[in-house]
Image (tube, rainbow, N blue to C red):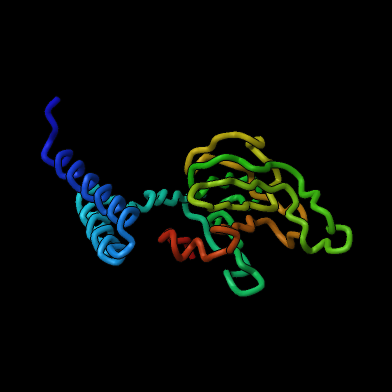
Length: 198
C-alpha cells in the first residue's frame, strides 16, 4: 500500500521514538541521550501534525427590538445594569411590541414568582421573558403587559416577545432590558450599536 510523504515522515518519526524508548530501557547509561532523542522526536511530530486553529464562534448580530425605540427611564449604571426603553415619542406607550435582541430559545415567559418578592417588591419583574441567546448570553425583558411567547419557543432576532406595559415594580410603562454574558450584565446598547431616538 502506498503512503503519502507525510505518512512516511510520521512513520519514520515513530520508528525513531520506539528506538529511543528501547535504548532507554536496555541501556541505563543512555537514558540522558534517549531523553534528548525523545524530545527531538516530539518536536518532529509536532511539526508534522496539522495545527489546530481555534476560531471564535461568529457573533450573532443585534436586532432592533422596536423601530424608533427610545430610552425612557434610568440608563445603564452600577446598581441599574439595564436600559429602560419605550416606544418612540408620540406613539402609544402601552401595547407596543418589543422584540428579541438576538435569536435564541425562550428560557422563561410569564409572571415573576421568584422567592423573596414579598420581602423585596422592588425586585418584581412583572410579566417578563428570558431568552438564551448564544455564546453564554441571556437577555431579560421585563414589565410586559402581555407575553407573546412561551417557555421553550425558538425566537428569531427582532421577533416580538411581549407588549410594553407597567407590570411588577414599574413606575410607568417601559421595558427593563438587560443582557448578561457568562453571568455578568453588560451594556448591551453600547455593544450593539443600536441607536435609540431622542
